[in-house]
Image (cartoon, rainbow, N blue to C red; front, side, top):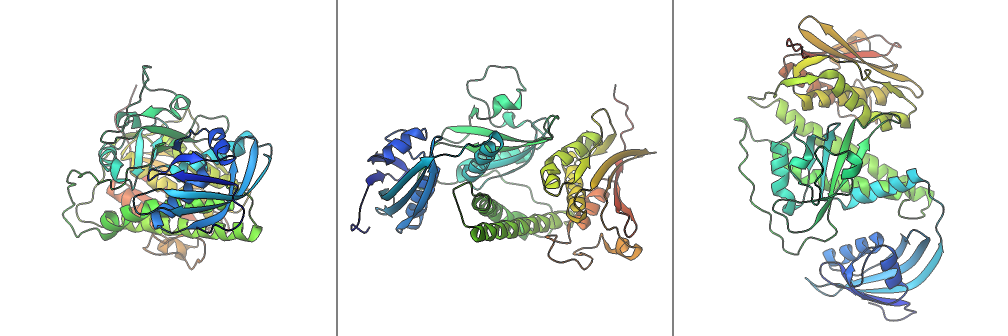
Length: 463
């Protein structure tokens, strides 16, 4: 590390990214950010820099913009790794502190969510009842609990991550669970849960994003626990679904989260051009993630012996959850989604997760192709032995020729640059048919489109 020039403060970290010692003003910032000395680095921007230097084994120097709640600190920091399996030397060469601008609660909450997503080692999608819909993690330490959660899709997440120091009767309100300490079977570090709701103002959440975080870094040389054998479908090996998707999903998600942090300037001031570059990176990452997920789903629905797990469900509840999950995306285009009323019910026999997947695709397409300041309606109908969900939009509509092609594999009807993969509707129709139903469309040019998902109705009337 260069010794020339002014050095305002020196510090040293260990192999677990704990700040062992630090001069002022760095030590004061560490304490104001909620950390201890010695203790895990509590300044997120410095922690990221130290992790990068230690992981890649080379010197890193850059401007760091940090917040302690009262001030915004801009500093030039140099970090040099001491060697493999050791910590880092830290030197601060400039320091400027200014009063932090007043931040409204929505902005502060947005910052918290972005930070949590960046640091999370496990992410799961939950329904309105806090039941697990999907889970992903690239942490070897969490491989065991991920396998158990995937095998128990549809159960409350607290069944897999028991709460610490809670004696209240379950289920608890989600606000009480946000930030709660949890026990992770097979893991030695302490963990806490963060719940991010999908909600519209005035309504209860339609679902949640569950993030699992630890205040301690993983130990060096951690070995992945052995997973229980997963029975394979008697078909060709799934290259994307079994080999590629699990490896790539989490890194791509982190690329998107980091790019969004840069784009929204949550980590500090940034020239407009660089913010736009970050937006392009985030968009490309989202397209890549969508393509990866669609390719994995395609392998599943085309595999021999593929079947769904039918259950008694309420299509109205699934539709409301799908609308809630995509409501933020719709608001970005000033589109209003009108889901079924909370008093509506339509019982059906189908797999909850697969119906939700189909509706997310239909509503997502409606948002993508509808003009700003338009409406999307989700309606329910019962037709003899079938239960129907209709997703109607005010988009450009489809000609008869286009309606005949829209469900074909890789068919994008000549569109380009809109982020679609041409697989969503093909997969959705395959899922509908696997559940004993059908997916159809009614449309006319200039009159929007009505996509209709039919699944078997539940003949058993519930009290």
